[in-house]
Length: 124
Image (cartoon, rainbow, N blue to C red):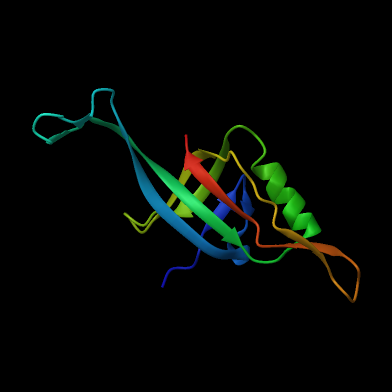
C-alpha cells in the first residue's frame, strides 16, 4: 500500500491525513447534454481536472496556521499520489471553503489544537 502524499507549497502534511479522496472531474463544452428527442447523450470533453477531499487528524496551532497560509492564496501548488498512474503529481489547485475544525485545548498544557479540519482542493 502506498504512503499518503500531501505536499502543499513545499510543506509535507501527509502524516496529518485522515483521508484523501481523489476524483476526476470532466469539463464539457457548451452544447454537451442529452438530445431531448432521442435521449442520446452528446458530449465534448474539453478537460479533466483532479479534485481532492482532504480530512485531517489533530493539528497543533502552528501546523494549522501554516496550512491555512498555504491554502489562502487564490491558487497554490500541491503534490498528491495520482490514482490513475500511481505516481506523484504536482498540480495547481484552489480551495474555496475551509472549515477550520473544532478548536480544542490540551488539558495538560492549555495549548489550542484543531480536530476535524477538512477542505476540498480543485485543480485549476
